[in-house]
Amino acid sequence: MPEPHAPGRPASLTLVPRADAPLSARDFKSDQEVRWCPGCGDYAILAAFQAFLPELEVPRENVVVISGIGCSSRLPYYMNTYGLHSIHGRAPAIATGLAATRRDLSVWVVTGDGDALSIGGNHLIHALRRNVNIKILLFNNRIYGLTKGQYSPTSELGKVTKSTPFGSLDLPFNPVSLAIGAEASFVARTIDSDRRHLTGVLRAAAAHRGAAFVEIYQNCPIFNDEAFAPVTEPGAREQHVIRLEHGQPVRFGPGLALRWGRHGSLEAVPADGADPGSIVIHDAHAADSSYAFALSRLYSADFAHTPIGIFRQVDRPSYDDAMAAQIDAARERDGDGDLAALLTGSDTWQVG
Image 1 (cartoon, one colour):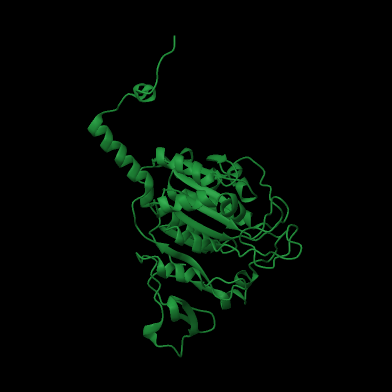
Image 2: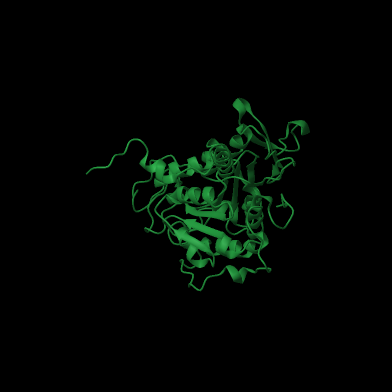
């Protein structure tokens, strides 16, 4: 995957102090024993995350990792940074408060498909629409792993689990479609086993000013093994994966390409027989989200045509920057104010 930004310190971290000395992946590893099930995709994501963070040139004390509840949410324990293992589904809300009040921090949210899309659904969509300067990494294994194998909001129709012995009746969420529908300014998808692609997406997310949402396909070898086999196994992935590169024609698989179909949808067609002018050129920076949403709708349970990469990357004001500007304007107009007078106000009285 081509790097969307030059290596080095991302522009989004200009308020964060620079580290006094170069850092390494070892600096970001805590002294805690990493404990996930053997073969869990979380190991690969953790290793990529720890190896990538030194590129930011940010002191460890200015990096914060906030998680909710679930297997993925153990990750802050293994990071030698500040971190918080918070309440189920509430990590985006806590991260919002932190990012809005401490713009000198690089704030990352680690969550799962159950944590973020079930009890945490409202917190997720509002953090995205507000464009808070946080980076949300959603580990999607399409199952509840920590509680031992119940179906999740991303499990496919008919999924047989401990809580759906006759098959799931729920239509699953498409996390990328959900994020784009919430007007997220940065939306991407990557895969735990593709280290280079994963690192490239993390790098781009860090460089983005505002909310960055990254869905990571993550294998759960115990309760949902090989759930993403069509896009991870050699031989199969070349047929199904659509690698998105900004400014490039969308071609993939055995001579296929994307073009616009009826009703504003995208369709896969043989590239050789298609009018070259009709083949879609990927534009991650399109101001209107309709194109990115159409890309996200290519998702299907069998992963026949699965885009990975950056779907959308647009500039718009971040919530924390707007809030800071509003406070500065009020302070310039009214001074620092009197907190005690505000709290007591005219609606309080003294008894006795």
